[in-house]
Image (cartoon, rainbow, N blue to C red; front, side):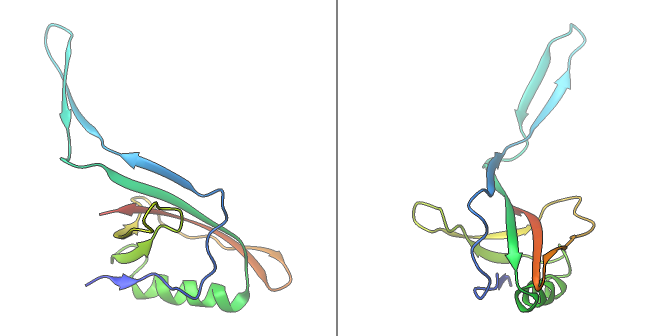
Length: 119
């Protein structure tokens, strides 16, 4: 069962990214043309979330949450704050995320970026 993303964290900065992922399977044929088909029947959404000024206590909440989901091993529910209906969907950390780096930007302030993908 998916856990909820911590609601006590502030919203990510407004410049977060949203993309739509729908990879295709491509097969090259002997005559030089390429045959393609969708890998999945639906499009998945991918977000890059940025926080530029988390307090140390907010950072601790995020670290506890990430440890709770096994840094990508588990899924979680997240609500897109800019979604038309503030839709809530299930997400995981994006593939290939081996580490999450927090940058100390000012006294008691941290910056971090997370990439998540809808499942």
